[in-house]
Amino acid sequence: MSSSTASATTPAVSPSHDTAGAPGRSDVVIVGAGIVGLAHAFEALGNGLSVTVVERDRQPVGASIRNFGHCCITAQDGELLGLARRSRSGWLRAAAAAGFWAEEAGALVVARSETEAAVLAELRADRGEDAVQLRTAAQTAEALGRAGGEAAGNLVGGALLPADLRVNPREAAPALARWVAEHPRGRVLWGTAVTGVESGAVHTTRGPVQGDRILVCVGHDLDYLFPDVAEEHEIERCRLSMARAEAPAGFRTNAAVLTATSMLRYDAFTTQPSAAPLRSEVLGHSAELLGIGANVMFTRLPDGTLLVGDSHHYDATTPPFVEERTYELLIAAVARVLGVPDLRILERWQGVYASSARGPLLVRDLAPGVRAISVTSGVGMTLSFGLAAATFDGTLAATD
Ligand SMILES: Cc1cc2nc3c(=O)[nH]c(=O)nc-3n(C[C@H](O)[C@H](O)[C@H](O)COP(=O)(O)OP(=O)(O)OC[C@H]3O[C@@H](n4cnc5c(N)ncnc54)[C@H](O)[C@@H]3O)c2cc1C
Image (cartoon, rainbow, N blue to C red; front, side, top):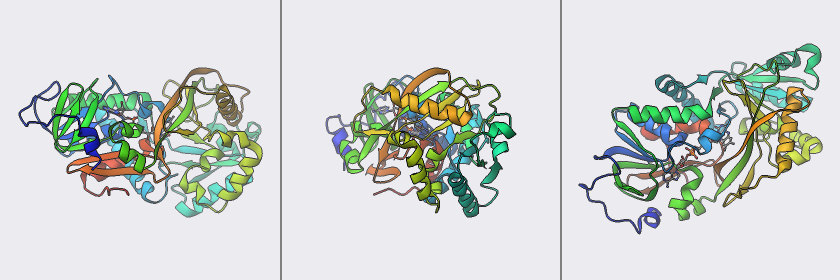
């Protein structure tokens, strides 16, 4: 049991021992106030349970606030599609309860070649017209704020995936954490790092916190608590370069905008017959973009600015440096889709998420009543509420 790794040096917990900052034992203790932990807190409270969330930072600053705020539902396939669909209703319920912005804006996939359009047509044949609505070049141009017709330029067409959701990643997790903290059965212990976990208690830098069920939702930092489990699951850190940019005049869609490099990443596209020709085509004209693992996409924040990205680099430990060439490539690629010569960049940052060649999820029972849940495929926003619902109805199976 790998939890012994983390708990070996921690003291035994006596049931009467005071907990970190507040008395009492919770039904559920959740380690990590990212979206995976908070979605579980939301679902647990909805099931009438008491919850304590323990977070080492003073506010959410992990992957959950650094991303595009795109719940990328239709592009998933297999088990992940089922979880993503389930997640959708959880997001909408959480947004209504906690009062954060969530829009059923969908995703717009832009096609700039016949091969890209072929992948979209194949997906539509697979999933049906309700799930994949093909768009003409002029319609796609208009959604992007180009003036239609002539301005379509290099566009061939596109597809709207209406089931996808949009949230503001800077707002959603903090709002949900506030909602949990204000709930009569919820509490959030900020600035409290968990140093060890065992059945019935987590040990923290402020003392033990007791709970009947413990969920470890620390994303890529699982290796700090359970190095053996992280190694066994081959968890790496994937770092992504992101920026916030001024939107060109006329840009108006709140749909997430995806491109050919996105089609090379998500299984709903990669399983289509034209995906292999598409990879060769993109390699032919954009080898350098593929070299940085680009998924050229962007989303609009409520203030009208754009979240643009991203690249993918994989390491055990994340180096702090980002080559400027990575940004040059990404920004130029987004500008080309928007039909503008350049973008004014307002902010840059790196995001990190857990990644594993072993599978898209780590769900591991570490001791009686102790479970670790990390999304190891870069779609934690998409899956979070689906995972939480499946955790509490008992259908989330442990992974290998
Ligand atoms: C740039 C970028 C773009 C992305 N785009 C998308 C997208 O479009 N759609 C999508 O679905 N997903 C996307 N993702 C992935 C998604 O953001 C992640 O899968 C998801 O946010 C993971 O959530 P989490 O709660 O597991 O991790 P995090 O948000 O990283 O939260 C983990 C929390 O655990 C805390 N913690 C860690 N160790 C301890 C400890 N010992 N004690 C106490 N607290 C601890 C951390 O401080 C942190 O707050 C993207 C990710 C990035 C980085």
